[in-house]
Length: 145
Image (cartoon, rainbow, N blue to C red; front, side, top):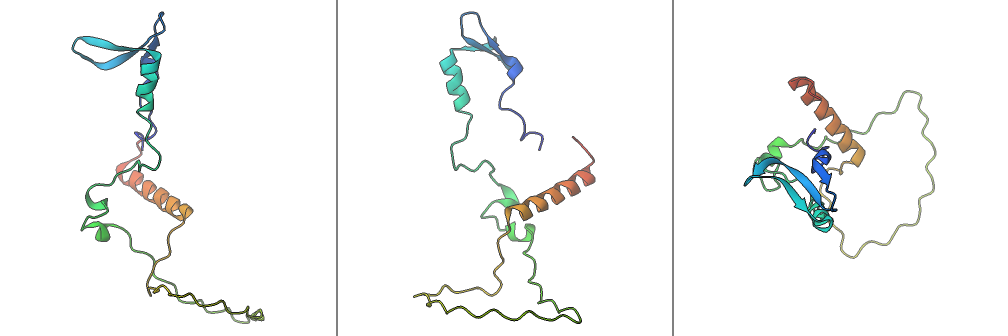
């Protein structure tokens, strides 16, 4: 997680030169050069290249979690089994049923319903599952901030 929150470049390595150009201190010298000197336009073009295009997935899965991996189904969690209808409490008085609305016309070609289709998870349920997983991982490895 700590790498996801980092910036794409170090702000303390950027210097504005007196003539208006921008010098970026390189992490390791290349061909004897310690700085990359650019015009403001070139610097902005290089910054803009770091921004991902819209609708491009920022996370790519490889290995077991890749979309076409043969090991994906054993490695991912199974959807929960549908719970049986709960029994009413003793002394429960059911509410009177509301009048049934007029039936809607049947669709021209009904879609086949699968018997064991799982409902998609909501964003909040996925987030809570991820948080629980993250806490388990941190406890097993040790707290590393």
